[in-house]
Structures are given as C-alpha cells and as structure tokens.
Length: 230
Image 1 (cartoon, one colour):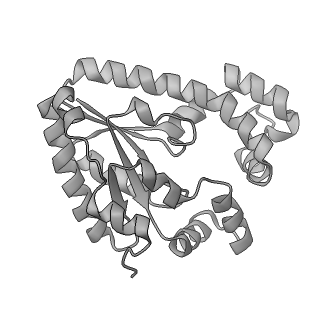
Image 2 (cartoon, helix red, strand yellow):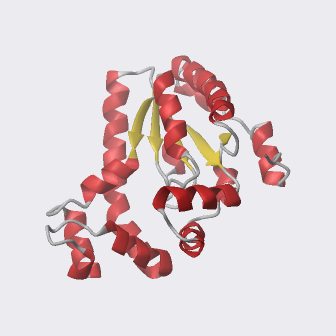
C-alpha cells in the first residue's frame, strides 16, 4: 500500500480532487468527517471545547455552533490554537487507526487522507506521499465567497487565518494545479494516480527509494512563481 496525505487551502478544490482519486480507485478518508465525529456531544473533545470556549458557542441541542466558533478562531490565533490542540489529536488517532486497518485489508491499496491541516499539525512524516492542491488566491477568494456566501472581507479573513498555500508546496511530492477547468484537473490527477498505483503495488521499500527529490517540474514552476495563469 501507499499512504497519501492530501492537503491544500480552504476552497482550493480538495474535495473535487479527492472525488477524482476515489473514482480512479483510491480509498479516501475525509478528515473533516472525523473532526465532526470528535466534537459530537459527550465526546472528550466536545467536553473540553465547552470548558474552553463556553456554552455560547453551542446550539440548544448541545451540538457545536460551527459558524460562531469559526468566526471566533479566524480572528483569534490563540483560540485557533486551542481548537486545534483539542480536536486534531482525536482526528489523527482515528486516521492512524484507519490506515492500519485498511493496510491489513488491502495491502496494495492507495490510501488517501484529505487532511486540510496536514502540514500545520506535523503529520507529514506519517505519509509516503504528499499531494498539495494549489490555486491562486484570487480564484480561492471567488470560490469561497460563492460557496459559503461570504463577503470579500470575510473570505480574506478565512484565507489569511490559514498557512499560505505556497508555503505548503515545500512539502509536496505532487502538486495538482486546480486553477483551470475540471478536465485539466482530471488529467493531472490521473497522472498522479498512475504513479501512486505503481508505488502501491511495488511495495513501500521501492516507494521510499523512488520518492521525488527534487520535486516535480510543476512544483518547480509554482515555487518560482511562474505557474502559468488562466
């Protein structure tokens, strides 16, 4: 098997890319689903969040008021750190359990985890390959405003609260340029898939020996800042 961590930024198109990988045959885990599970009423993370942030960030049924808490942590780096330190250990524990279980069941599978904060929480070393979904900030802003019905200021605030996408490129084995059409993205993902599929069937020893260094030509163009615009 080969363990793949996929990351990017808010509204960069991670879900669309994961959907393509899934259709091609990858086994995909969405870490956001795990995060939702971790903060269900009565769970340890839920209890700690309630103690940390207070009942005003919870709905009458006891569930987390995600929008209210999101607005808070986007504006307050310390609150954002507290949220991450509460939820992400639970998420990463579940990720490790899934990878182990799937590895036993499907030893030649491509196991892909969609983990938005993969770099920020120090999880890079837990994967054999890292895929970064890259998009220009102006496109990211437009997509985020349309998707979440945010104002320009709100969308900028959300993006600025995250690690810049260009900084994540330094950790990438593969970069998917998602600035263009879905068809263009599909072709890139198919190319990455072929390599990951080969590595999964070659075995981890061979996979480790062939890990790209320096990064792929696409990465080099993005890192230099001369990725072609559309």
